[in-house]
Image 1 (cartoon, rainbow, N blue to C red):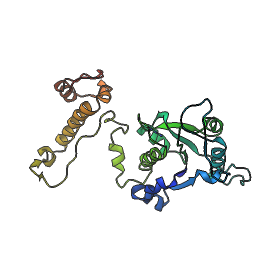
Image 2 (cartoon, rainbow, N blue to C red):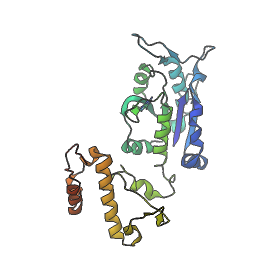
Image 3 (tube, rainbow, N blue to C red):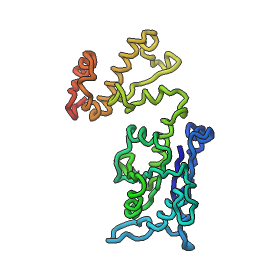
Image 4 (cartoon, helix red, strand yellow):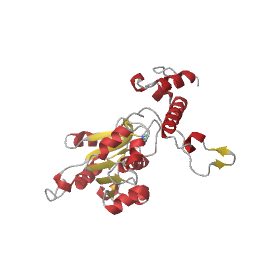
Length: 271
Ligand code: 6GU
């Protein structure tokens, strides 16, 4: 997969040299190219922003600079040799913004199947909207938010998305089952977060590992894990627990939910 990232702070992306993503880059699974947006500004100050039309606080990123940057990265800039872009294709463009559609495991999976992604990082109050309008007619463009809080810029959001997408690429995780078992991964544990995990020693500062995990009884271990997942989902994510499909619940699940006085379909409950 090829990833292009355009930002006025390329230094933010140093973490992509380490760990899983760094290894994937070394192996060639991931081809990450980080670009300095200011390289496409032409004035002495390398200006990328200006005051907003209609007034208001903050600054807006200028469309001309973004247009040249995106055209160059896509290989469609004036003077580019036709067909020199990767496979002659074009990237799917992601614009991080708190006003975007929510990033989710499902969207991460969808993006992990793309051959080429282009992340356009805005700062200040955002990018002039005509940039998204212009490229929407040529590329698939998505404005994406990573949660209901406001960051100073899209860079950290892109790091989050690249890590979530990168670990889904074939061969990036050491253990392919890890991604399958994830909270929020499609499948039977959908809408349940994962329960607690333990390793050696069996007793640490007087805290014991639950005996069932040492029993070697796989059926009991699986049941215990499911109980703990349900407890934790009810406690930490009642809105997810309320969405549990009754069809996917067995007798024991229903009994446990009863004990927790949680009714599937109810949005909130004092637990
Ligand atoms: Cl994608 N960008 C910014 N600046 N803030 C955010 C965000 C993105 N997602 C949540 N907050």
